[in-house]
Length: 59
Image (cartoon, rainbow, N blue to C red):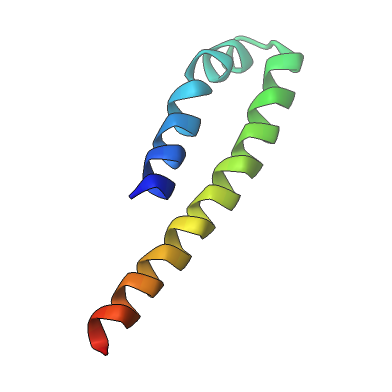
């Protein structure tokens, strides 16, 4: 499922910035917060796709 792969890539891509933010880098923290909003939106797309798949199987 393409949506899930996109979600995984997003999460993996912010690892370095998370470490920097934990070290006190404010700019990295800002990037992480923005990326987490993108993660939230991507997760919603995965949820929608799963519901579509489920409804297709029910019919």
